[in-house]
Amino acid sequence: MNDWSEGWSDDSRRNRYGRGSAGAQPESARVMRQVRRTPGAPGGPQGAPPYGRVPQQPAYPGGYQDDQGYGDYNSGYNTGQVYGGGRRGGYIPNDDAPDDEFQHYRQRPSWGRRIKWTVITLVTVLVVTSVATYFWADSKLHRDVDLSKVIDRPAAGQGTNYLIVGSDSRAGMSAEDKKKLHTGSAEGKRTDSMMILHVGDNGDTLISLPRDSNVEIPSYVGSQSGKTFKGTGRHVKLNAAYAEDGPTLLVRTIEYNTGLHIDHYVEIGFGGFANIVDAVGGVDITIDKGFKDKYSGADFKAGTQTLNGEQALAFVRTRHAFATSDLERTKNQQKFLSALAHQVATPSTVLNPFKLYPTMSAGLDSLSVDKDMSLWNLATMFWAMKSVSGGDGKSMNMPLAGSSGGNLLWDKAKVKTLVNELKNDQTVTVSGN
Image 1 (cartoon, rainbow, N blue to C red):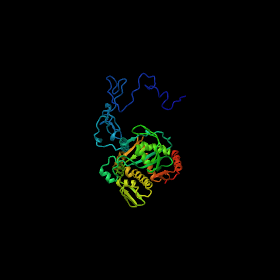
Image 2 (image 1 turned 90 degrees about the vertical axis):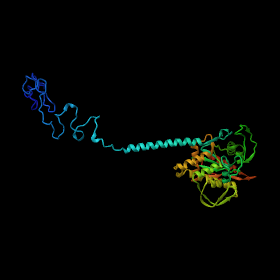
Image 3 (image 1 turned 180 degrees about the vertical axis):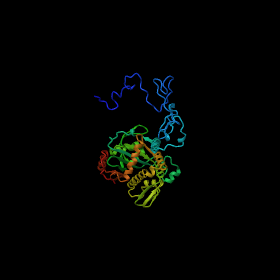
Image 4 (image 1 turned 45 degrees about the vertical axis):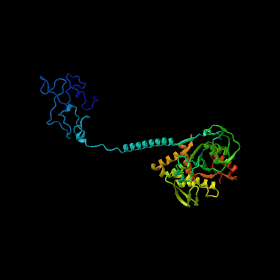
């Protein structure tokens, strides 16, 4: 029985050379139209190829074209050229050959790439500018106060405590400046204002220490001599501690009389204060009641107004115009410093390099800070003062219990509660005068 399909029977497979037949003659090569053949060898049948050769294929006039008109198979087939396809169905040059037809076309711009490189460039410029600004600002800080010389210090609590001092230093001021700013020409330095700024997680607190506060001078080591001066129980006004031995004795005296650890010290003089206000373009403030003071040069009417450097200095120094001179002055100082911090931190200042850099330069040139103060600490202090002015913190005077011999007496019970709350970074519940 024959299982092969039609065309694959044993009979049909006989004498098929090259397909497994047993015949002695090989099968003729199949016709391949696209390959050129050589003529048959002499002695063979007319038109028959020699043994093992492919018979000659007919040539087509003008070369063979398929029904689409592509490809000349008789013309240069074995020359390495590629047919059928490519641009406009024609010849495709190799990689090194010029393409005159498409040379005038440009590649479409890649907006994604442009945006990426623009962002990279901007970020790079921002980083470089920020780093350069940081080192420039850091180099301008005057780290003149060495708190390591303060002895017998209380333990540090939670949060950070800054002692901010406004002195009557006239360093660098000309005679004309002193006359203009009504500072006088007294030698040395005294403190016109002293504040403790507590920065913590439960709100920031700004506490003014009246310069006439009655305090005891404890034992201390001289900042210049290195000698130890034993405490004798001597009581003086707080600003006398600064006049006696400068910032380190002032810090030592405040820590001794309060039990509160001071982490950082910041001081600014008359001239520097006025320069900062002028650099920022003036400070807006609302004055509840007008006042005059011939000693400070103050002459203000009630209402909202913008104070320049000269006016600002007169505003924070005035005390003779008030019945409770020192207390009213400390309130004005708190009010103005908070407004100044708010003005410095506004976008119109921070985002304007023509205002930001002069303001930073004036401020950094005027400040005297402790050796451990960083720019980050300083920025934190200003932002905390801004939060106090914005209502997110509390401002107060040190609680008082009266006066004795012209010195203001602190309320010891309230001061103890206040200090405990600050040490533990708790919300302040004590009210001041």
